[in-house]
Length: 312
Image 1 (cartoon, helix red, strand yellow):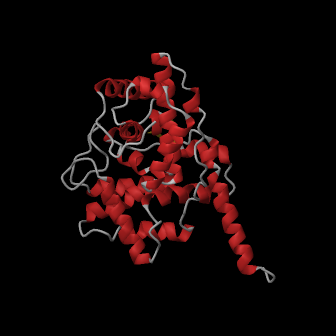
Image 2 (cartoon, helix red, strand yellow):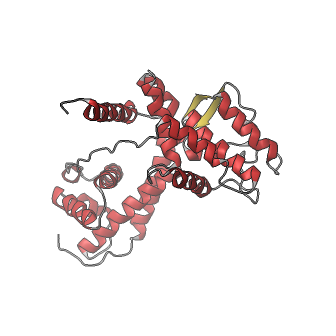
Image 3 (cartoon, helix red, strand yellow):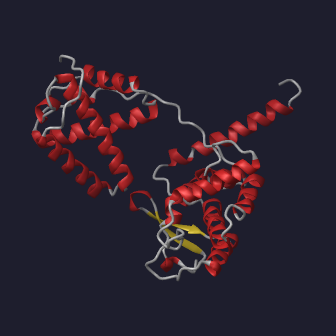
């Protein structure tokens, strides 16, 4: 293949195939809108690269002629643009899935392109807060806003993240019909997968305190957590409350709302929780995703050993 300087516009036939593949992925694998958008960006980057690499927009026949060398050239170009190993691995995975789907649909042999390996990457360990830090964050969150109901709202959301291990999107997608919380809360997570999450009294009390002062009526189909104008609360506002808390406490930038979910899992594991149960509570599809928290425990144990052992 000859090199090209600039990627070209996507051919209509390829755009149609891409749209069909994304629809197929969403329907058959029940993927979230966020994942579908990420896949779309991955494939647009790949097809744009092929356009520039060939000097002509990519067509189904183009994919049929791909080799390992071509895939390596794409990977090298993405690394040159600063894409990290983990993001590149996901991009190549999406690309291979699309090529495989196209080969079935158009009847070409994609084995040469599919033989290319993804780059290896080291999964970074989560950065949880210590138990006393997590509790302090919840206390400080109530002082982040001069409007009492907004301060109570931020406290309630952050308490759900730490007390129930929710993703921030899961907490903010709750509606009035979900209240009052029972012993367990039904959460619809990634890929539409439902799970049951026990609700601690402290989380139930924090939400009740917020609702007692919220100026907006609680209706079954309305958001449980509202913005200042009554719409569904934006994630950026909770990130802002967390940013204020970590500045007050002198915590590092890794102390984000998602770090409270990491803290939930890490503290459960340290208290003797088993991985399978924590996997279910977090809504992880794979146990391998949950196992990263054992690395956090090991890292802490090693740090204590090195600081305390007289020969360390």
